[in-house]
Length: 284
Length: 273
Image (cartoon, rainbow over all chains, first blue to last red; front, side):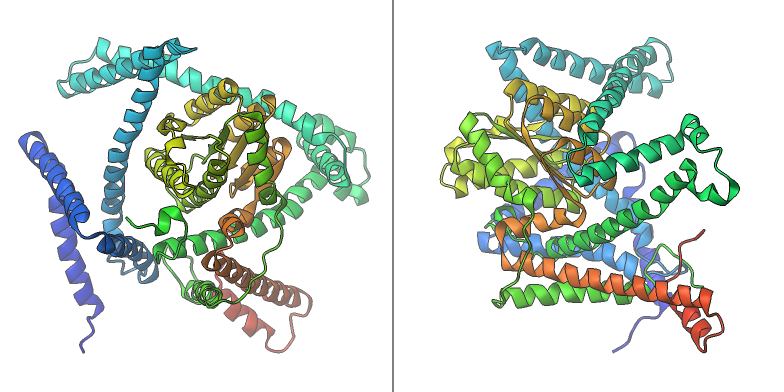
């Protein structure tokens, strides 16, 4: 049996990559329309073929696709070196495939949104006006976005851009910032609840949190600034730094190790189709 | 000292290979009927209590699958959702699932439908309980908070990846008086959940949830395999710490420099450390 050399592998992968680059190159006009139509037809054909096969074969097909999908990523990491990485160039395209599948699902998400809010408006349930506002906002920003893109394509600037900016920077961003800023108030109420000393653990947490907070503000640092040189390590800023970088970091790293191993085990089960549960092992 | 590259090195081959071996070996032995022990996790034992409370109050439950999308963490959240909906379906209790990711939305819809069907009450499944709210983090937070207040949810479960929205959600859950259970591998959000939820499942416990709830041999075996993997990593850390400490205290010990050099070559440090 002949094993391919690095150079032969590189030549094969480069050839595939060039073919791939030609296939996924940017298209415009009628070429774009043909590609979109072709992609939809191929997708529909693949779905039809999957639904046409006998039910007992569907699960093995899904398992095989899952395995191959995972295998590409695993091999990309495991067999590559700094000088030889034949699969790395395909990763952006791999990400694009994921994005396309996600886009199909986005449509389903939108249908769900429309159904829920349309029913609320239709039945005039409590707060139906908010559902109505959803439709207004949705279509307003969608139309503004299309108009902006059209104006950009035709190299026309002016009101199209400003309308979009008003919607995006004038409405969406301040609303998001408002939600984010509310965290400050929630932190205060959560901290009050957490710092009530009810047990040894909460007392320990209260003391540790107080040291760290004081160690991070100038007023707190001032409290222990008078300590003599040989007690320098007891200054609040040093104790606070030690708490953050030693006990706290050790726990965080221990958790990170556990999480990484747990994620590896779950990923392995999904990759090898060993996962169990109604969703994972039911007849498709 | 060896170099860190974006690709696998010899340490990865050995450690990851052993981890995969432990996990698969334990899965196989569990499937062959070997009894495996799993310790009690209070947060998960109280899941029935949480479902029961919602049933008694006649209010719905809320299951928030995080904002991480379709990742290993997200899929684990879906496995947990399946158990939760099955238990809720037994008592004809509604479970509302708000989603940020359209793919997760379709998966959670399928899972819920399947769970109601498996409990013999497919007619109880309401497609409107599985909602795609928004793909924006804070818009989702606002939407979930709105659902909590409108529906007066009796139980709120947070399982998945969370970021800055965690405290907004959990504090509002407190405000409506819901019993709250959170499970997340997002280390930075754990303190917020600890401060606001009744039970919090932290770190790798998150990946033990489906095994704990279902007691299926495959999942239990995988869990025990993970523990062996963690033991391996602890061993490597202890050996490394001993070698470095000896190097600092007894630098002239015979063979120590050679051992240290080879250990660091095999487990290269990240740049800057």
